[in-house]
Length: 302
Ligand code: PSU
Ligand code: MN
Image (cartoon, rainbow, N blue to C red; front, side, top):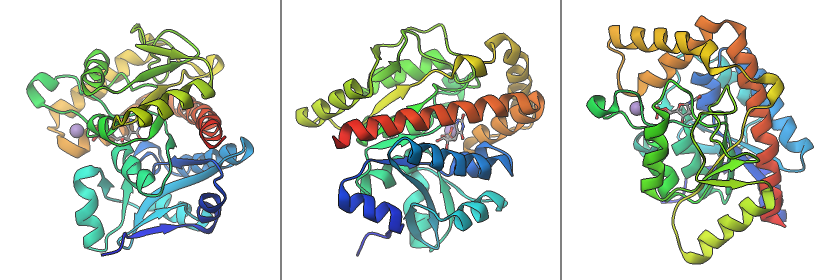
C-alpha cells in the first residue's frame, strides 16, 4: 500500500531543494475561528511564512488523501464547509481508508508533517488537560503526540479553558521539552504570562534548532513545544477573559458537551462572548507564531 500523501507543487519543490518548510493545521480553520476570518487568517499566515523565507504547508484530508499544501481555492472551500470532521490521531486512518474529508488537529497535523518530512509546525494554541480531567479524563491527544512525533510545534501556550498546570505537568511526564521563547514564563495564549515558570527558555531560533537536532542524535522520540508569547500590543489581560471562560465552561457542562466537541464548543462560545476582541488577539498571535516557525525552519535547514 502506498502512502496517501499529496504534496502541492510549492511544497514538493521546497522538499526537493531542501528549503525550509512550516506545516499549518486545518482544525484552526474549520473549528477554531469563524468564517471569513478563518480563511483570511489562513492566507495571511501563509504569506507571513513566505515573507519570512520559508514555505507554508497547510495540511488537510481531502477525498482520502493527506494534502500537504493547499491552493487558495482549497483553503477557501475548507473554510466555508459546515460540519467538517475534526481528525485527531484516532480518526486519521479510518477517514483516509473511507476516502473521506476532514480537518487535522495538532496531533494529526504533526503525524502528517512528519510523513512529509516537515519538522516545524506553527499554530495558535495546543490542546491540553481539560479542567475537571480528574473526573472526565479529558486529555487532548495533542499531548502524547508531542511525546512521540518529532515535530517542533510553535504555539502561544494553551487557552485558559484548560487546566494549565496539569497540562504542563503532563508534558513533563511525557518528556516533552516546553521552551518559552524570549521570556521565563509560560505564556497563556491571549496573555503573555500564565504565572507558570517555563522549564526551558530560549532566545533564538538557532538554539531551538540545535536542541531539536540533539534530541535526534540521542535517539529520543517526540517533538518540542515552543511557547511564544503574544505581542504586547495585542495582549488581553487574563482577568478580562476569566468571566467569559467561566461562562463557556458552565454552558458546556450544562449541555453535556463531551469528547471531541468540548474544545470546538468552548472556542466558539468564547468568540461569541468576547465579540471581536479575542479573535483579533488570536490572529495576531498566530501570525507571530508563523514568523517564529519560519525562523526555526530556516535554522534547521541551514
Ligand atoms: N486550541 C485553540 N485553538 C484550536 C484548537 C485548540 O486555542 O483551534 C484545536 C487544535 O486543532 C487542537 C484541537 O489540536 O483543537 C484540540 O482538540 P481536543 O482538545 O479535542 O484534542
Ligand atoms: Mn478531548
